[in-house]
Length: 180
Ligand code: IMP
Ligand code: MG
Image (tube, rainbow, N blue to C red; front, side, top):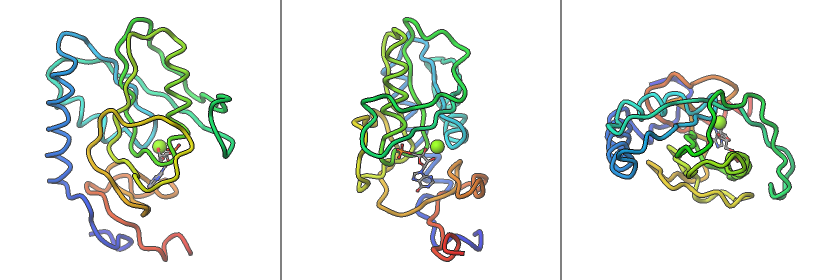
């Protein structure tokens, strides 16, 4: 185990199993539909690449980089799209793929933005849902693998200061790492 990790909460095996199960659900829901998976960079990359390989409905993928501002609500649309989609989403069944839903601020804004482009549908698929977090936006996970508490977790794509994304498991970071 990495020396900065206090404890592992989801092992490689747990993740594999949960992603495969989620893939089955999504494949059934989107049978015959060719969904577009929209990964929010960079945290979603590991999850998205595993998830797409567990789908047997077929899919396309694209990526976005979004940054949100403000501390109250996103109803004013305070989101900056730093990298937009290359794909035309008109009439498409879009699934936004995110690493973790925390305050939901970013995804509420991203969902609103995508909905303004006349897709057939927009759903949110998050690997983790921080259920105890104070929610700033009303976006909810339509699909998710696990709930987590109010702890800072890294690995399987999730970072702290751009590190630990490569860990094959998800673990809680030792507090002394971010108080350094
Ligand atoms: P929010 O839902 O708009 O507050 O932002 C969610 C984003 O915050 C995620 O995509 C992550 O990049 C980051 N984030 C929130 N909680 C954690 C965590 O525990 N570990 C790593 N990144 C986190
Ligand atoms: Mg992120």
